[in-house]
Length: 81
Picture 1 (tube, one colour):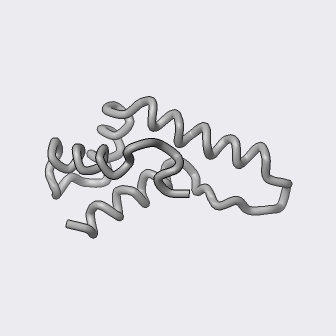
Picture 2 (picture 1 turned 120 degrees about the horizontal axis):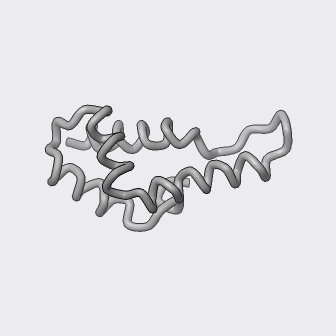
């Protein structure tokens, strides 16, 4: 799923690194992502809810919970640096 959930993901993550520093904590990333990119946070939640609605009961879908999705993004940028 990755970048398809919201546009310009890599560019926005790079901007966050530039603004908050390479050593930002998970907590700092989470709070500031939601504050700086509310439209993208809404897109992530909407995508998750859509998968939830359209997946048959007892089946899994590829979209992690929005907080886990954000944590995965944080992990990807914290290990890239």
